[in-house]
Image (cartoon, rainbow, N blue to C red; front, side):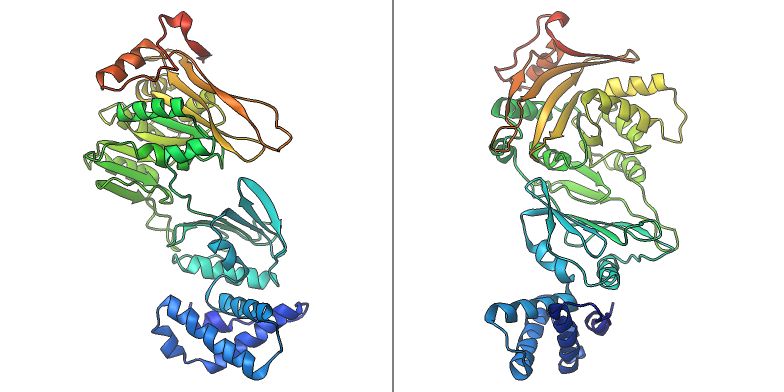
Length: 446
């Protein structure tokens, strides 16, 4: 979108509050004062500073009489409308906000500290909200209209954006912006109660010993955050290929290849799927493959990679329990165009998946590892899951927080032996099962 179009997009004035009316009036005055050719040559920060300075002169010259705070707010609103995303601009700068949800022009929710808040903000009209949406999607060379009413994209700054508009949405244009999660370390996750020291030592040993790990959980439970933290334990000398729909992982190792899928263009061409990238990654001589999320036929390719020489790979899946994670992997793998019997898929899963880490979001918004389970079945036998750690939650306290404790169980002997052979010690809280009778078996799944 051109600079003139971004600044001078017309909006209806009827029904505006006084502040909104002033924003429209002074945006028009700003346009009259600036040299667009000169402005286009400036960097973004310099452009904003210049606009703020020019607008300040206009307000001083022509009024209205405003307090210092009101004047600053008006200047910020006009410049945000001109160059940024209007009322969303301050929200994007607030590091405490993890998600922004716009449900039509009159409802703006945010997620802060794991809890939803309705903010006293609104767009002046549906047209203004649509202009903001169009400005967002145009930065990634996408468009949204009646012919293309859904857009899922990642902004250059890292935020994940989803848009759906009428006629698919009956509530008006819906905009969801998911902030890029900060890369937490395992120690930071211990500090907020997501893990404890003994569990962290176990997970670190499993990753370093090249166990294949599936991180499972519902939406918003922190799967990507934990995946990023676990990937930090991979040795520096290994070649890692990461594959995601929207690149969110931030690995610190030097030898990392980052791949991102691509949606079709406006002509419906150029689509590159996660499955295409998983297949290609196996030709890139990776030591480990990390898939941000498996959600379709690429699951079969990922399982084959895990069981054919790419030990230590990591992936996430949407599931509500460790058992559900295995069944979901089985269902997703069957979505491949390759017709393969469920029994053969079961063989692939038993061969490929070593550990499932289950995450849960509690009623107070906190996110925790609630179970670590080992897949102890082999071949085509029914899935057999052994819990080695569970979080036992207590009812919410008067402080509005969910507390509890991590409980540890003996690990299967073959897991302990594999850790030993990789020079990784088993944390003392767990111990080794003497026999199957001493295992915390979750059950056998058909």
